[in-house]
Amino acid sequence: MKKKVLLMGKSGSGKTSMRSIIFANYIARDTRRLGATIDVEHSHVRFLGNLVLNLWDCGGQESFMEQYFASQKDNIFRNVEVLIYVFDVESRELDKDMHYYQSCLEAILQNSPDAKIFCLVHKMDLVAEEQRDIIFKEREEDLKRLSKPLECTAFRTSIWDETLYRAWSSIVYQLIPNVKALEHSLNYFANVVDADEVLLFERATFLVISHCQRKQHRDSHRFEKVSNIIKQFKLSCSKLGAKFSSMEVRNSIFAAFIDTFTSNTYVMVIMSDPSIPSEATLINIRNARKYFEELENPNNSLSASNAIHSAANHAAAAHGMVNGVALNVYSQLELLTCRSPRQKLFNME
Image (cartoon, rainbow, N blue to C red):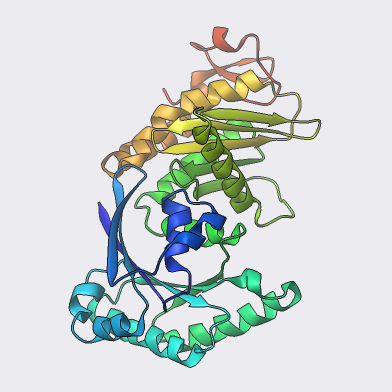
């Protein structure tokens, strides 16, 4: 399944840098050596196995922009699923930026009226911290007004912090065909293992594609911070010739497990109950893998979703109770050494 994504904005706005960080494993400081994009660069990014992002990175030089709206309009703006328009927050030609953005919207309205529109107010690290909220709110209001009758979603971004991951995670989330079934399954999994939170990361980019939160947390950006940290750790491992597959972080307050989940994802399970041993959580992660593998294939999402519902409905009848723990009778021996008073065994059979 292919989804066409247009990445547009004036030259120097940071389009290619962010694309390289998200999809080509660049680190922020290495993007300085990237040159300007000439005309349109096409790339096919495989995401979650069956989903392919047909990414069009459109050069932002004035001569190219004029061609896009004159001789290339039908080719560029036809069959677009997502338009991502990048604004340099410190641009000295804001009026021209807005003019090109509105030209894009007119072309989208004619050729792909159902496309989703995202605006990234980029390079926010160059703005004084105390001014960032004010400036972004002003830009966001202007962009929403100028976008009518279309709707746009705006993000403030920087290649130097987690905001880039937050924006791109939200964008890609809109393209996942069976995301609701995925979220439903993740919620069920989180309840079974009694996790505070469960996050699902796409394997190559470490973008958060789904999450379940059962306890409130003060830091609303923690998912993207984790994405950024773990991706950099994974890259460091690969540079040293080591293969990253899993890790556990534990202290007296919480335990976090990051493990290979499906062929296209990693899972992070966060627990605050110290009575739940690591082995119980790791067994549940292993048991859940095949069901989430099915969900990644849209053709099988219905049957996988039905399996989730079925398991939830007959869990009480099909499981025996041992010391207050609901255990599948065929799997009790496996958990004899790692039972907890609260965590169940994830089993869909």
